[in-house]
Length: 565
Image (cartoon, rainbow, N blue to C red; front, side, top):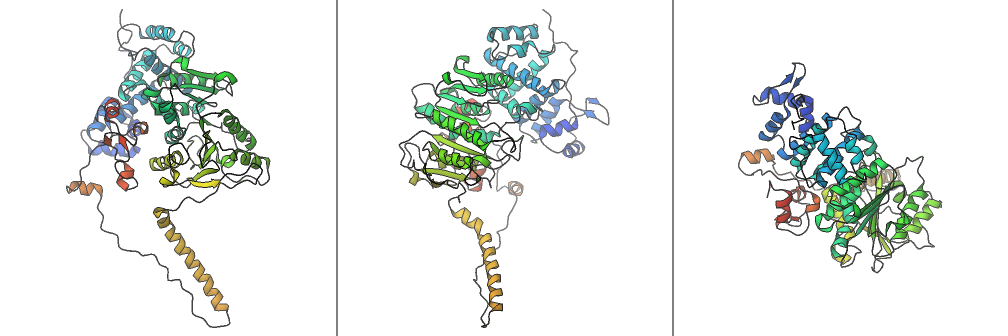
């Protein structure tokens, strides 16, 4: 049979604005590169006003000149190709088609979608019928694709090859959903660091390692499956869980099913229901990770938010845990005194199942940058000597970086859980608060973090300023007094010493005092306290973390990062 992939398909060309987006620089930077570097690729199309370039030549130039990491820029190019080829389709359809093709390739044993000379469209449809005969994942999406489906198939193949596997490709697309302008599935998207924090706080890794069976992970408000994907990604292939979830939107239900399938779950091990709550016969979960669906301040009921947490707490009737993300205005901030919402929250906090409460910085739900969030960590371990206390942390004034995430995880998992001595660990942010009595008054969650040398240094300027204000006030009092008295001075000053001379990293490298070595961006799920190779990142460079506390196993390095092994 003759090939259907004919030369009539026009090559994809990119403009200088596209190059800037690929390289993550400003548009004038590309103009400067083109003027000053004679090796910059020549235009292959367009005109003098809008020159167009071969994307492969640009990618090679960026990588060869050290202006971009080769693997990252190739991934960006693959994603750009996918979104450009489908730019005439609604964004939701593009996401559906792309993720369905990725899932199909995974289910067919990682067989290339557009490989060979047969009719690509017919072969893809036949594979979809064979792998999803009941149309639970992708059949309707595959059969409704446009006739030039092989163009998308080729681009999907390129993306998978670039990022090494189908799971990485799927997650790459999900992280770029906002750039693809898929607003409908971006509204509740979380930044990856927050999803990773929730997964680590859930205790899923510890439960999976110690259980003699497959654990059940549940999300009663799954959305696109961000949190379920974070947990399954953390567990890896060694401890693939069962997942149960509920979501009212059938489009998101199918997307979540495809996402879990690519993460290695068999369809018998995932029950993603269409609805606003899990049915009673869905089984008791070992781990619950979820976010309270967003509602505007005007339409949000504090009692409904707290009742949702109460429903989850009731189901933790054995050694189970849960992490719940919701509005900080309800879960952490002060509530109206003597209100029903204040009493309801106090009753929940009186339950020993509530282990920790964390107020987070803003901007962690990118679609709603002004939305302030907080976490509740529930753990049904009732034998802890600290069961009459709650660990409260407020990091709303910090950026949620790797160091803050690591500190929060260490604070919570080393505080009340079995096998840990809370007195043997320094808590970076957590403060113990006495749990309210069921018949007692509510408690305030606004607490000061524990003091350490860094917080003392940060407070120095503020304290000296306060002393200066007091001195001025006392001077006024002294001036108005009858008796003559000398001015009051505390003599408190900040010891300011000249800074040592500094040189830039570039200058140190040019003078031979420093060698710049290209590093590798690691998935946090691959980093732990044990391994063969030391992980050296920004925290280690800045002295925030001692080198050697973060490690990566050499087998994981070789398998997941073959170019750097």
